[in-house]
Length: 75
Image (cartoon, rainbow, N blue to C red):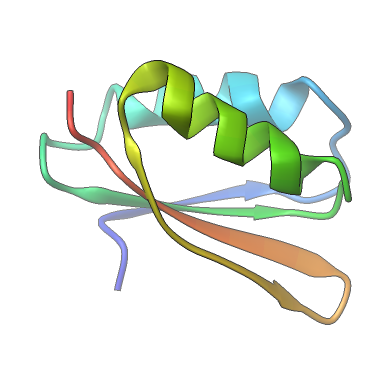
């Protein structure tokens, strides 16, 4: 279970990334953020986001029309 869940469904790039960046500030170091998005571009966006910020993308999956990302805050 994630420490925090961010519902970014219905938002298009770059809003899911921007909201995740803000939400991660409230997640303790070593904690996790689950992001739920519907934008198909979010798959590549979150991979790039985690690479560039030094956070770890623990999981990326699709549940129906929703993309779910589990990000570990390493900062």
